[in-house]
Image (cartoon, rainbow, N blue to C red; front, top):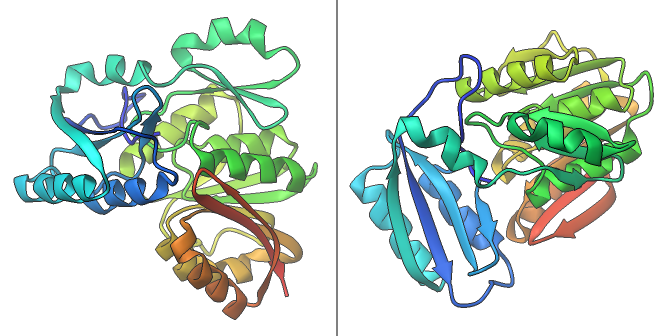
Length: 295
């Protein structure tokens, strides 16, 4: 899943560069390639299977010649056989994004569809919960392993009447899932302005009530929650661990995702220091997700 797409509501539109790296064979672990894109300023990526490739958007203020050159060199070092860096004019954002985002089933009871394919998805959804999203320029449509893992863990953790907080909500997909699972109160945080716009629009689109905060920390206004979910970078998870410990109820659970294997030990150590103990650990496509409970 790449950061980018057609804007929704008041979401800010920005010109960008679409960076794409093609490989002879599918890497055993895509996470190293994603880390290179993330270091260049692309918070999300999309994987292609035929041919094996990864692509991501770099916004114009991040796409300096030096940064592109560094990104290209690091991708070649990882085995990329060809690279492309193509400008995407503002007016082409929407159509560019629609190529990548189609209706999909995720978890055991959800179908996610973009707004432009919502009607066709309604009949396919059957008894599944249908979530209608426009990603705008935010991360999280359900196709990335980190989001899929979070959603599966939410299905197991959220009980009717729970309070849930989604830290770094992106498109708002996990907050919407929590509401659909019966949470009585849902809170969410996000710091990126376009993502805040996308999340607000998606909450309205799906008829859910979520109290959204523009913050990269845990707001004081958020009460203790039964479930806290955070699909973030390892560095952000490490920094937030003490705040999450104060936020989660004594019998609650912290669901985290977005950790590459090389960072797992540091994330687990930070959670232990914050007085959490590991409950369950999952790995998919080179990404680690886990649930922690207060010690």
